[in-house]
Amino acid sequence: MSAPISLVWLKRDLRLRDHAPLQAAIAAGRPLVILYLFEPLLLNDPHHSKRHWRFVWQSLCDLNQQLAPLGGQVTICQGDALAVFDAIHRQQAIGAVYSHQEIGVDATFSRDKAVAKWLESHQIPWHESPTGAVIRGAKNRVDWDAEWQKVMRAPLADPDWQQARWLNASLTLPSLGHHNWDSPAPRFQSGGPSWAYKTLQSFFRERGQTYQRHISKPLASRKSCTRLSPYLAWGNISLREMYQITLLHWQKKGWRRALVAMVSRLHWHCHFMQKFESEHHMEHRPVNRGYLHFEYANGPQSDAHLRAWQQGNTGYPLVDACMRCLHVTGYINFRMRAMLVSFLTHHLLIGAAVCITSRSYFSILSPVFITPNFKCKLA
Image 1 (cartoon, one colour):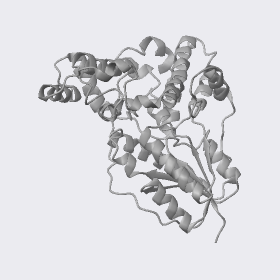
Image 2 (spheres, rainbow, N blue to C red; image 1 turned 90 degrees about the horizontal axis):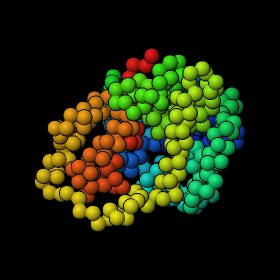
Image 3 (cartoon, rainbow, N blue to C red; image 1 turned 135 degrees about the vertical axis):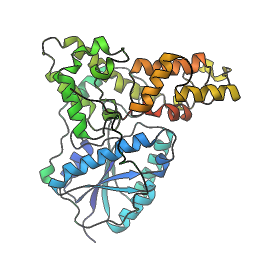
């Protein structure tokens, strides 16, 4: 049998720079396979929609365009993680698996535990790298701010692609099922590291100077906000690289307030991921226990209100304008996102079917909260 391979499992880290798993896998010197799985577990999960998978597909296409001159590619297939790992191992022994820790929902955590058990049974080491400054299993956030600063200022984990040894043999894996993720969506932002860097460059060129003044304005924020949220959500650019690029502009005349405001939100990004990691039960029950027995509205009228809210037909102009904008472009700013949820829960009293800690909440609002893959004209 040929030499064991290093298998890099991509999840929400669809990039080639500042990528510790890729760096470590290449340094190990084994033949390299980079894998992305479209898992039925997630394809059928109401947290995700066509918008998310289109963004992921665009990101993978971008990665393969960048890898082609290097002689490599991302192997893309569809199937359950355990079945695909077993199929690979039968054809080409896996020497080690490399990935980032996924700060996801209970379904992905359960899947990861099953994968860890399978790998252990086959004596295959799994090297997981932290995601940003999130600490796996931390019970509290004491001294967490200092750790965040340390991680954000550390050198980037850039792989040495000249040393990559690609697996020459082909693998027979489950093919990707029918999809329409490559259908055009001209009003949405496109996925991929290339677009992430273009978007960031346009922010620093001129449109971000009014960030702190326009961040809360429904219309002006469309230009002045970073528009990097989906690229961070799917890892087209690392938070650390974005932070360090920001520091390079720190002395730019007239930009300090904008950059201070932006960096504070980069900190919040990791902070709330850490909060979810440490208090993961919030996926299934309210953070405030008082809402466990709150009498939300239900019945036919409540269902009609929910549909009207989803479709932007409530009769409240600002609410409807935001929802319709979201449908057409995939983007509204964070104040309007909060307003939509507040209106839904506080005014319409809808919570049993769309509770802020339930799967259905993320299902309905997935274009907003998971990854708004939107497209705008960038100066």
